[in-house]
Image (cartoon, rainbow, N blue to C red; front, side, top):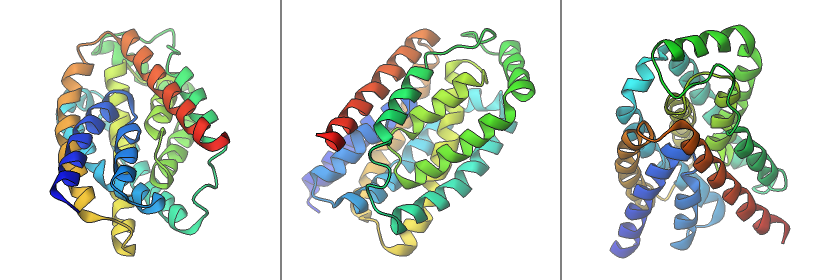
Length: 259
C-alpha cells in the first residue's frame, strides 16, 4: 500500500475511533475507507474489525471513571465479547457474505430508535443513581438483556456495522445507567468482540495488516479523545445524535441492499 493510502486510513481511523465510541458507528467511517483503498469486501470487513481494536483500547482508557462504576457488568460484557467475537468471525469466514444483508438495515433502524428510550429511573448523573439503575437492571431485565448482549457480540464479530448501535439500545432499555456509562460498557463488549475476532482473522490470513495497523493507530487516538466529550454532553443530546447516526447507517445500508 502507498504512504498516501496509509495516511488516509490513519485519518479515517481517528474519525472512526471518535464516532465509534461516541455513538457506536465506527464502521460508518472505517469500512468505506478500507473499500476506498481497494480492499475486497470480506477482507475489508476483517481488516476493519482489526483496525477498530484501537478504538477499544483508547476508549477504555478514556472511560475509566465510568467503568469503575460498573466493574461487574464490564467484566461480564467483556467475556461475552471475547466468546461472541470468535463465533462471529467464524461465521464471516464460513457463511455467505450477504446472509443477513436484508435484515441488517431494519435491525439497525429499530436499535437506533430504541436508544431514545429512557427508563423512568434513568438520569443524566452518576453515583448513587447509577447504582440504583444497575440494581433495577439486575432485578428486572437481567436474563433478556444478557441474551441480547451475547447475540450483539456475535454480530459484532460477524459483520460489525451497527453493532455499537444495537448494544447502546439494549443497555438503554435495560436502564443500566446514564449514557456515558452505557457507552463505556458498549465499548468493552463490542471491542472485546473485535479483539477475539482479530485472533481468528489473523490465523486465517484474512487481514491486510498495513491497512489494519494504520486504522488501529488512528482509532486509538479517536477513542481516547471521545469519552471526555461524551461525559460533558447532556444525556438526551447524545441519545439523539446516536439515534440519528444509526438511522443514517440503516438508510445507507438499505439503499445499498435493496436498490
